[in-house]
Length: 154
Image (cartoon, rainbow, N blue to C red):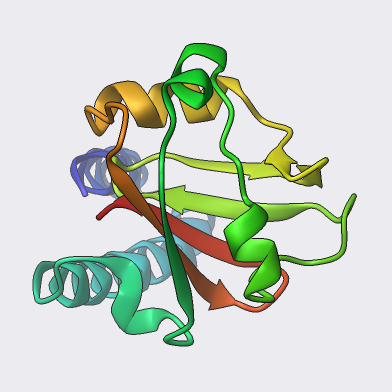
């Protein structure tokens, strides 16, 4: 939201310059931009309110999820084994790209390859940021089938 407020302030500064210069043409160009910025700010505030009233993104999900334990080998090698999610039908066909949002605030695009996610750097960040250790459980939630998933420590 901070970036949106800063953007709005910059837009208003530019608008004020045009008004001070009595530049009607430029003022008319800025008016729809200001309206759009105000609309975006309202949308951001609504989304923030929804998120604040929920502990996780699960409220937006299909309700389908899978839970499994993380091994030390997975942590050491920065991979997420997704065999349990595959068996539950919670992944698209192998080689199909999809997005993952994590409880630690990250988002990335990846695909399943040989029962693991291809994107290993983001998995390493998730393990580190969520303070995952051997034996901890992770939950894989389906948000939009075959397109979007949510990953959290359980």
